[in-house]
Image 1 (spheres, rainbow, N blue to C red):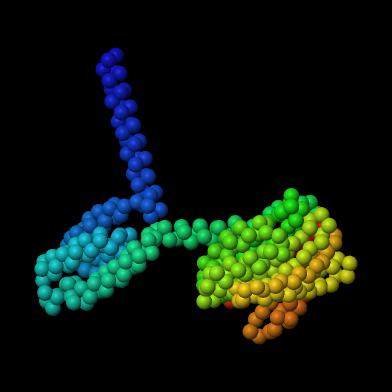
Image 2: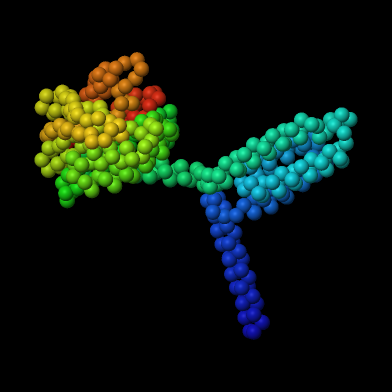
Length: 380
C-alpha cells in the first residue's frame, strides 16, 4: 500500500510539474506575440537555424543555396531587438566564412560563395537593422503594431455607435473610408441627454482622408465624445473650435454638423461648422428639403459663431446627414451630387429605410476615393 501511494504521489507531482511547465511556456508565447516578452526564444531558434542552413549548403548546395542565409536574417529583422540582431548577423557572417572555406573559391565551380551572395545577405541584413532600429525608436514591436491598429479601429467604431432610440424612432449609419482602408477621417459621436429625451449627434469630417486623417479623427472623436452632453447644445461647437485651435495642427480644420433632437416632440436644431446641409424628407409632400445652418469651419479662427436652424420631424419624416465624399466629385458639383443622392433615396420611401445607408453609399459613391459617411434618422 505504501509503495502504491508513493507511486501515485510521484505521478501526481510529475503531472503538476508538466502542467506548470506548459502554462509557463504558453504564457511566455502569449507575451512574446503581444510584444511584452523577451526575444530570447526567437534569438536561440535563429542561432540554431543558421548552422543548420550552413550544414545543408555544404552538404547539398544545389538544393540549399548559399543565399538561404537571408531567411534567418529577414526573420531576425522582424523579431529581434537591434542588440540581439547584431549577434545574429555575426553568426551569419561566420557561417558564410565557413561555407566559403569548405566549398572553395567561387571561380572554381558552381554553387560557391560569390561576392554577389555576400552582397545580398549584407543588403538584407542592413534593411533588417534599419527596421529594427525604427521599431526600437517607436517603442512598438512589429507583433504589437497590428494589434494596436486593430484596437484603434475598433475604438473609432465603438465611439461612432449611436445609442438605442425609443419606440417610434429608427437610425441607420454607414462609414466608408477612402481607398477601402479601415480608417476614416469621418466619424460620428452621439449621446442621449436630459433623461434620454434629447438625442445629440455630431457628424464630423476631418481634413484629409483615410490613414492621413485617421489619427486626428481618433483624437477628435474622443475629445468630442467627452464634450457632447457635458455642455449646453449651443456651447458644443464653440468648445470644439477652441480645442482644434489649441492643437495648432498644420492641417487642423474640420467640418461638423450637430443635431439636437427632442425624441418626444420631434423638434430639432441643427448647428453647422462649415458642413454640408442636412436633408429632410417630408412624409406629407414626399420631397427633400435642405436644412442649412450657418457657421465657419472648426479650427480656423477664434470667437466663431454658429447659428442654428430649426425643424420638426413628424411621423414618416427622415433626416439625412452626410459628408462631402458622398456628393462631391471632380466631374460634378455638389448640387448635382445632392440631387443624385435624393433620387436614390426616393427608392426607399415606400419600403422604408432599414439598411438603406450602406446601399445609398454603394449606389451614389461606391468608387469615390474619399471618406464617406451617411446617417439617417427616421421617425416611424
